Image 1 (cartoon, one colour):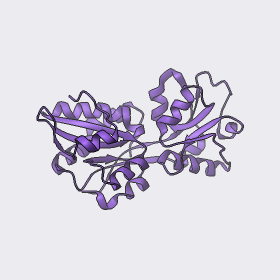
Image 2 (cartoon, one colour):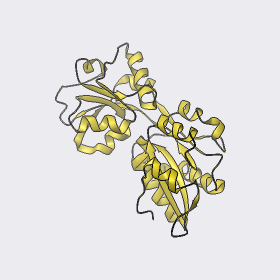
Image 3 (spheres, helix red, strand yellow):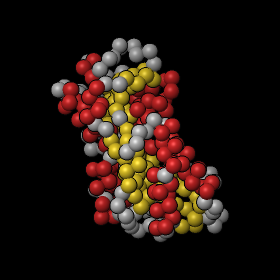
Length: 245
């Protein structure tokens, strides 16, 4: 098992070249995944390693748009999982196989435990310190769609590059409310409350995964994709709150 599962990009670029060998002689598989997949993919990576001797899965988490930019600029990766299809399409020419949809996720309003501002829907966010994802990332695009469906204009005090940072602003008290995925609310536990709202049905995000064309071990990368889409991977994703694709 890898002692350090999540590495900064600069270390990944310096030490890894897609599938390769580590100091123990194991094959390394570099997986880039959307920030909202962190908990689930850490479990999936462990389960995949348990079924594949001498394989170490290295995970790099960030906002989907940031990941596609890194790959476009030459970062080595074997597998990419994004939080929506339009973002995956940005690197369509770098994929080694068509992307597979493996999960879906829906926005929730997230507020501190106890809901001190008595938020019940999107309209109640006016006048609060609201944090959302930036519009160029999937959770931000979804936030724009729900606002349009509700016929309102959101006025966030901050726009973050991934959904994890939005959640962090709320849990740390830097924001009164945010828009995050259901899975993020579940992962935060008792620290927050997640509020459903009808417009969320207009902005369901579907997650694709694919192996990269320049992977040094296309077969292994394909096996990881199949594992995520298969029964074991799907069970882990459902437990975290992801819905079927």
